[in-house]
Each structure stands twice: as C-alpha cells, then as structure tokens.
Length: 402
Image (tube, rainbow, N blue to C red; front, side, top):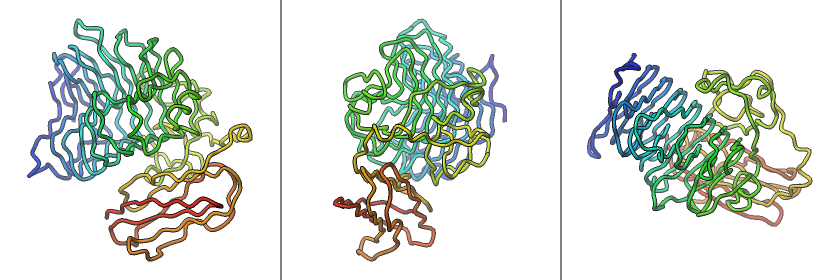
C-alpha cells in the first residue's frame, strides 16, 4: 500500500494498539510506502509481529514534543522482527528527538536486522536542540534480548545541536541487564558536534555483546560509555571492553537515502563481519557469505577476507560470550576468544546435566571463534554450554523456544 503522501502525511500511518490481556498477535506489516507526520508504524501490546520491506518517510508535519520515529515498538510480548526496511527521513517538530527505530520496554526478544536507516532530519519546528538516533532504547527491556545486527545507519549533518548517535539510550535510568547484542552493523555519523557518537551508552551495563561493527564518526566521538566520551575506537575498547574486532572506516553509499555500498567499500576487507545463524541474506535477499559476510545491511558482490596481519600486536584475552540470539529458534551463535593456541572442548548440556552435544573438541588458534549450535531436534527449554580451554573453564545458559 501507499499510505499518505509527501504533502499529506498521516500523524500515525499504521497504528497497532491493544492491551496486555489481548495483544495483537501475528500481525505482518510489509512492503508499504509510508508517509507519516509523527510515526510510520507505532504499537502498544503486540505479540510475535513482523515489520519488513517498508519504505518510510517521517515528514514531521505533526507537532509533537516527544518522539518522532519511523518504527516505534512499545509493550510487546513474544518475538518481534524488524527487518529489511528502508527509512529515508525522520523529521522533528518540537523539542523531543528523532529516532529511526524506537524500542520501548518490549517483548521476549526483539530482532532488528538488515535495515537501512538514513537519518535525514527535516526540522519543521523552531527548536534546534533536538536529539537524533538511528536506533534508540527509551525504556528498559527487562533483560530480554535485543539483537541489533547487520543494520546500516547513517546520520548526515542535520543542523541540530542535541545528542546524535547511531545507537543510543535516551532515558535517565537504567534497568538493563546484559541483553543487547550489537553485531555486524555499519554506523556513520557525520555531525560535527561534541555530542556526536557512534554508540551512546550512559551506563556500564546492558551489553551482552558488541563486536564486528564499523563505526565511523569523523567529527565527533566513537562512543559515550558510563558518563564519559570515548574519542576513538581504542578509547572505547579500553573503557567499555567491547568491540575487540570492530573497525572505524569511512564508507561510500549510493546516496544520502540509498545506503547501498558502492565504490571502494565493495571489497574493503575492513568491512568483514562474522557469520550469524539468524541472518543468512541481506536487505535485498542476496545470500550472505558464510565465512566473512559484509557488515551492514548490504552484501557486496566481491568476497571479503579478514586481515589478521596485526593480530600479533593485539593479544587476546580469554572469554566466553553469551550466545546470540537468545532465546533462539532453531540456531544460535556461541563465540569464544582464546589468548593463545590451546586444546578446546565446548559441550552443551540440558538442565539435568545430561550431555546433549559436543561442538568443539580439538586444538584452536588464538583469536575469536564462532560456533553455530542448531537445536532443531531438541525440546524447548534451558540449556547449558561449557567450555574447557587450557586452564579456563566457563559455563553459560541459553534458552531454546520452538
């Protein structure tokens, strides 16, 4: 459908509203061209919904002192998927902020992937102090996973003076546990501001994982962590202990609204991400590499190879990361990091201690390793994975939901 027009936008173009007792279940909103004055898709208590393939303009013809957004998710339950959308503009009109995708205390799991989010921000109001976010959390998710992977987020110069961040947290309180998985994204923020960030996170908790991202902020700061700005990738890695395999590289897009990679970005090995079981195609349905997929929503047609020539100068620390996605169905990724070559055994058990599967049993080299666990033949429930790597032994839990 075409909903609204450039000159006559609906305040809220698609509204899905219910309550906790009767959530709107299994709704799919897809392949629409949407013009909205405030929000293109806005929800309250939805369950197991899917929003994909939409092309969205938020024109800000509607005066609103809080949140203008393309997709606003609130009060959800079950699993929500937001993918393969093209957000071309999100304007402001008032004193609040513009957000491409707004996540507000929602759902057992939210999967945000393969989206183009171009934060071109027409200002229809008088205030210039508005904030701008590509993806923003404005209410805790009660520890449920937020899988934000393979998105391309672009913030061109807006002329506004508030916080500008590719991904950020907007509220002044934090109840997040280690629920955010921010992986394989491209973030470019061209705003020349002291408060311009790739990732803006005022707390020292909330991330289960952030890695294999390309975050490029040439005139601002790489990130903001726990009350302080991190000027570059190195400072961010030191402060947040995240993004060990991320980079900060300029990229070429087709245009300010078409975030397809072009030019020297095609074949740029710095953009080599890590394979994810939950995302095997790109925004246009093209198969992704199962070895080195492109970061961002678009999969280039030139294969990539990760440059490991500098690994000797960047020793690794042992870690076993939380699996992602979690909960999962039917497959999930388990990532671990080794400081040196050693014998590794990685096993999965059910909650009674019964051995289910051995995923790794043998020598592995120093570096980051990702293993896919497929639970398709198992019953729903909580499982435990344990790694024994040299002197290191560590265990984590994961949840399989059919």
